[in-house]
Image (cartoon, rainbow, N blue to C red):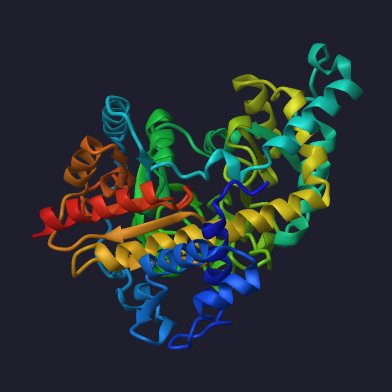
Length: 479
């Protein structure tokens, strides 16, 4: 049963019609009385739905004429500026990110949070809780010995088979034996880096990049070389090529080609092919993180960079954390030519994952129910992303920049006048609002005036008020 109020379901029905162009800008909405007759709802429900669409900036009321569709406000807000790829790259650095992340977590835990825009995951009800619970029960009933039996080193065979089959949609040809199941994508990245590099080595990363990757590099004693990355097109191949010429000790490149964290950008297929070819020529391993790739608005799957890999030079990492079950911490990788070494490191570092969750996930992902779940999740995230972008465009101060991706759950917001993301973060916490300041996503200071805002929460009146409060905080500090 849909937990949303009836007026929100009705509003979402017409929101989709507006977003898909069925109802075009300047077109008249059905009258309130027409909504009552068509959808068999009360007059108050129809009015609430129209007011919700009006609050979201999708329609406007005209005296004695009814409601009309508006041009989306987010179309008028400029995108985040492109990086200057001609700028001299900074020195590769041991990343001092642990203290910054620890301070962030400590401050977050010290405050009660009512609106969490920092968590890059959807709300629990967006995931198939009941179906997974039933799959776990069936797995335990059918294989009662599973909890007391050894686990295959690379993961449960059924899950590895399903993952290899699902990877075909992303252009990847892999066998079940190629798949290694891990404790989330974080362990997959950790294993990949340990397999190809040593302490003191330089690793090329996107700039900005996910702070969890910076933490891994610091933990392994490796240096991060930040490569300019476009909010529209991903990592600059030209800047990376120059880095290979000027920094002779790059031992690996780590990228998120599909819905990059935090930018949300997707690298065009031609650029993915160029990236794979460049790394192969330089004989430098390419480590691909494809955690968000399945969350595209379009049902057409995005190609992985791994699909252009003919030599095993790409290590492909992914997880079910964002798409299926955050609480299961299941990830996986394809190790390419380093598969044997990665399998050895996995066994030495953490041993195999527990099997019960793997069996349940294999059953669910092997069915059409998984495709239906993904379609629902994509639709919901698109609605939430568009609503959040509309609120930012409507209420954040003039000079704000925003790039709205065609998938995923993250928005990267550039604030005007050098507004400090850390100051905004700390002020927002005082009001129970959590955001991720841009300083978390780089070893330098170039993103201090940015925020990463997650759209994983359903838009409720409380969330709308929190976004308005956040906009006021930004406006005060940007004035």
